[in-house]
Amino acid sequence: MSRQQNDVDILFDVKNSYYIGNFQQCINEAQKIKPPTPELQLERDVFLYRSYIAQKKYRVVLDEINASSPSELQPLKMLADYFANKGRRDSIVTALDGQVNNSSSLQNHMFVIAAAMIYCHEKSYEAALRVLHSDDHLENLAMNLQIYLRMDRVDLARKELKAMQEKDEDNTLSQLAQAWLNISMGGDKLQDAYYIFQELIDKYGSSAVLLNGQAVTCIGQGKWDEAEGSLQEAMDKDANCPDVLINTMVLTQLGNSSKPIEVANRYQSQLKDSHADHIFITDYAKKESEFDALARRFSVAV
Image 1: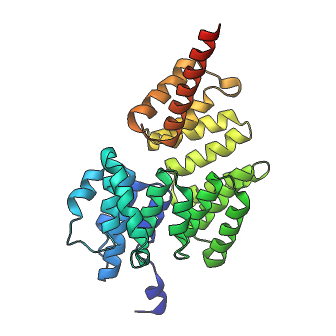
Image 2 (image 1 turned 120 degrees about the vertical axis):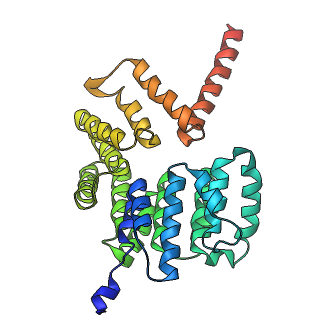
């Protein structure tokens, strides 16, 4: 076999489909491929199970990963358990805190990623950053960048992007990270982000994640019709994607395309049904509760 053949990543389509949010395609590709080595088989299974988790098909992961499964897969069982069982989340996080203090656990890349995802869901961003800094894997850097953007630290996110580009500027994760950063910076950078998403769509096909990203850039530029077109196409790809639902709900109240409040409420109801613990819904419920409390205080005062 030639060196060029040896350098071909046979799991490229599997990994790339996961990163751009084409989870079913990732599953389909993973089930077709027969990797030649146990290491590649394990890497394939990691992305297969991660895609099932992204689709909220937790039972598949919980049923198939058992005590005899490789250590690299065990964190995915923990992640599926966390999302599937709300009543167990506190105990899972407590156990996770103990594992994070074990240096051997941090040598397991999938443990680091799963732990960071759980901490982010708990809004424990500092804990997520601590565990992610255990190595400089490209995916760790991408998650660092996302967290810094959530914390409104664009300056630190920019440093993470530079580190990613130094490692692999052409990688899909690096391209996505550039687009995320551009969106946060706004202004002329929004159009640059749009082009990045379009280039990824041209190369790898559209997905709800990429189309939603385009819609966000259009909303930021006041291009309501273009945003609506991207969101409608994204809805066709994944009618239950929370980010698509949120941005569609927002768009119904913007620009000249403003629609009756019932339309926005419909998307919000769908979001509550399918993603009750999404940060948008939990924050919205908190603000509703605070508003009701204030309303009661002032009504009594009057």
